[in-house]
Image (cartoon, helix red, strand yellow):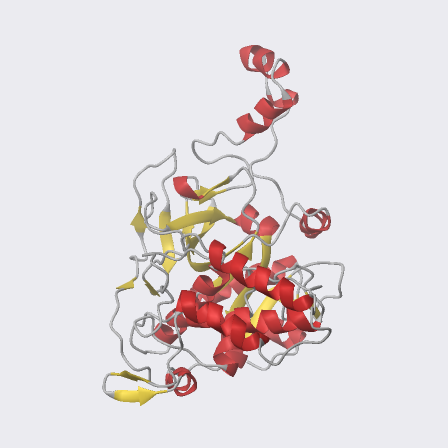
Length: 394
């Protein structure tokens, strides 16, 4: 049972039609309980906000108390371990604010967790997270260390990096008290009742065999972690089963598409407009447009539109050509439909609540199928027939 640090829990009714916005009316079909929307602000730590939110929701799913857990403790530990790998490889690996969906379970398993009230990571005169100066300070320091001006590494460089992190994020307490009980980060994580090994990363690409694991080739996979590779249809089946059985899951996706309009509350993959679809005045205007204007016109969306048909090869082509990139981590918390019956997933973001759906938006099934890089899901949520093919015992 989790030690209680009270925060709010949100769960929309199973049937809840929204107001019309940009020509859409979304009806929530199945929404799972989640803790409050957070704000990563000017930090490239979406991966940690998504993973931490997911773990908070897993605690709720298990009957635990709602918690507000520290993202910045996890971020700090990843900065330290990324730096170690960066130095060991002579600066040839990625060192940045970014991370992967495997980083939160990695830290929980090795280092533990803290409540946000104990470690907020705001020790540098800001009310909200802003890591660009911190990243620049760390990167400049590490690059100086990599050059080995003393011909070999000193025994002090790690303490130097920790000093930078202490200055910006604050020192990590060796022990702390929650509800009258004293914990270390490790014992606190153990008290929350989650097993980091229960969380399975899943992807879907054809350049590796299905139902085997491979380290997905993106820079932010600094752990070189293996991901389970399944056909696109199985990826969707896992996502649907998770939501239907009360689980949320982490969603890593490309958000660079013109149809990703999170401020308006939706993300779509509209089918390209062609001259064959037009006549009369519309066609006359179209043929005189520049390529840039035509591209912009395609993404003028004011209600449900016809979307592309996504196949396994579509996904692969977009990844191979780097049209699908490792942009952003979020949490999928439910399913919904629009007024025409088109299906969507409801997404919890970490870009504050000052948008039309208060920090949430709706992603269409075609966008999910085309632009999902990977997901992180509790293995208990994976359908038995798929888990068997993945050689997972759930």
